[in-house]
Image (cartoon, rainbow, N blue to C red; front, top):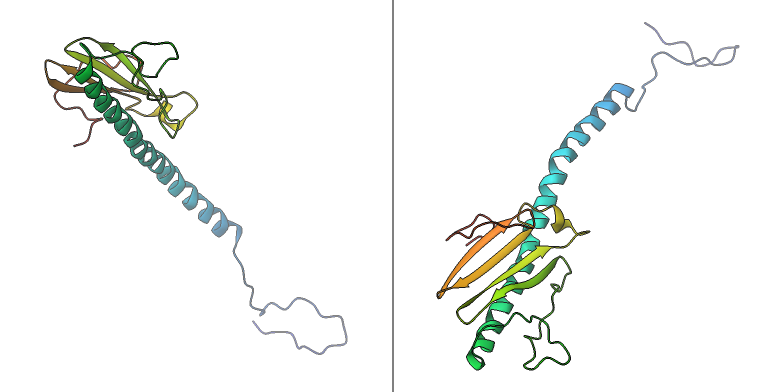
Length: 168
């Protein structure tokens, strides 16, 4: 195939030998499909990694409550169920917030007596932790032994010596 001469008497027509640059529609669609597949794999993995890293906020809050409970028990006959310090309480509560600093977990003391307590950090609705497989994290002190539980629903079930939601 030969190119037309550049100087002719008639108006120039598109030259078939000209280099054409750019992407074809098929190449563009193929690139979009590849990016979409990568995003479908990467985004959920990233979100799970973020949720897992935010669990450390719950671990820290539960550890703070455990330490405050031990200080409380040192001065009183039993552990307390009062997490926050209410205005007229005598003796006052532990003086801790019932929401973690980042706002991802609600912290509560579910039960307490002279020999132990049960604490829960539960992922708050409207946060990424609401869809975490370990939304609820629990600690129980009974008879001087700590046991742990974790769950994705409000009912965390039984406690175990080790639990998958509690990394060590």
